[in-house]
Amino acid sequence: MTLQGWFLILLFVGILLALTKPIGMWMFALYEGRRTPLHVVLGPVERGFYALAGIDPKEEQGWRRYALHMLLFNVALMLFTYAVLRLQAVLPLNPQGLGAVSEHLSFNTAISFTANTNWQSYGGESTMSNLSQMLGLTIHNFLSAATGIALAFALFRGFARRETKTIGNFWADVTRITLYLLLPLCVALALFYIASGVPQTLAGVVDVQTLEGARQSILLGPVASQEAIKMLGTNGGGFFNANSAHPFENPTALTNFVQMLSIFLLGIGLTWTFGRAVGNTRQGWAILAAMLILFLAGVSVTYAAEAAGNPVLHQLGVGGGNMEGKEARFGIAASALFSVVTTAASCGAVNAMHDSFTALGGMIPLFNMQLGEVVVGGVGAGIYGFLLFAILAVFVAGLMVGRTPEYVGKKIESREVKLAVLAIAVLPLVILGLTALSSVLQQGLAGPLNKGPHGFSEILYAFTSAVANNGSAFAGLTANTPYYNGLLGVAMWVGRFFIIVPMLAIAGSLAAKKYTPESAGSFPTTGALWVGLLVGIILILGGLTFLPSLALGPIADHLAMIRGQLF
Image (cartoon, rainbow, N blue to C red):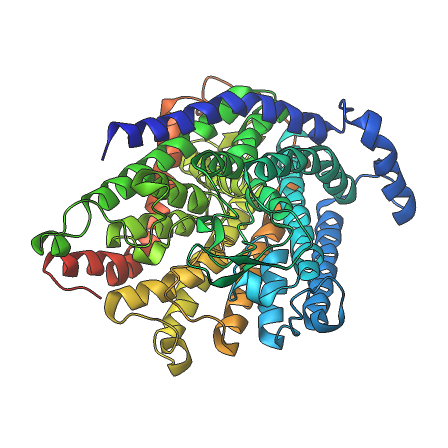
């Protein structure tokens, strides 16, 4: 480890903290439906959408109607993307003449981008046409991210409102978030990427002469526009197979740093938005503090493990840290930081291959996802997932002080606790169930590249990434098969929407409650004790649930490495 590496990590955290309130204030204006400076230009566009769709943005919806409209919207988007991929060969903007995407891969990809997972069982530049990338995938990057933030807004209203049956209007939320937040930021980011050397063109291939005199075909496309929303919306699906290790997606150390900031930007801003929505910004800062403690702990372990390297190679006279699978331009510190950022959020973009990390270095990205990706998390999904843990934490605190638990003025009763447990239980049930199945079936065992505990880790990582809607991979699993495309597709859908519906039910239940003022007997939910309780609850639930599987995978892999055995 180096001082330069730690400076990079601390600089990253410092800039994030500086941006938390400004971006949170902007999103709070959208949460309330207030005018912004962009309404002068985009207001007519917003009203035009409502007129064409026959929507009254002022019409409020109960949680059931909000959930139904959200589900129908996402099902329609998924079917549309499936059709685009299957008809790719006959659609325009296909300069390479790529054929139709197979049935099982189209199924997997359509669900993947709908669920904000962006798992890719394919190489983007050799499988998807420009039209498929733009119309089938990039559109999802915007709308799945907007859906996540809209759902967070709905839960915020559940905590903030009193004795009402409504939690907002899904169509108004998604429209405003897309128009006034995602689009303007992505235009600015895309222009920055273009200026930094990222391609943005409808051309498919450019033939060039190399220094050796040979001819080489370089694949191009509308990369910058996809790169901007890929990071900002915590999507992660790369235009190229190498993702953010590809110089056309991530050409410089500066773009690498900006991409990491983009992944966390909206997630950390939503913590301030939540605090402002419930009338106490200290609530938001407490949540952010818990997130950052978990994040910094993960970065420290990953950076230490990768900087230490492989002791087996050290015995052979190969010193230094572990550079296998890492982009030489960025080095160990930037790669370790990127890996924790992308898995703490539900992004899944990578600038290094996690399969090549040391056992403990690869365990932290895996464990980040197994915690439910609430360490900042995906846009919207991170904060509403974290609030589910907060409900459980305040319930435990209520048991300790011997009174009905309360959180930000709302009594937390059996209905909310049961729904929170139901939502949180989805991840371990599906992850561990499908991992166990794939570890014994022939179709599942045909996928891993490695044997032993590392091969098991590849299977475990795939289903963890799918259910947690992350999308990154250990890169050692052959996943483009009917078996894995099918099961991973189901896992991604369940991991997204089987959590959302109970969460919206909690929002509806809380919105109908009276406000309960804080009293002398209330458990404080803004101080160090509360932050520690939140961190403890998340780690204990994650540890108890996933420690046995981690022991079979990365922990066993690490112990074997110490004894000189590699997989």
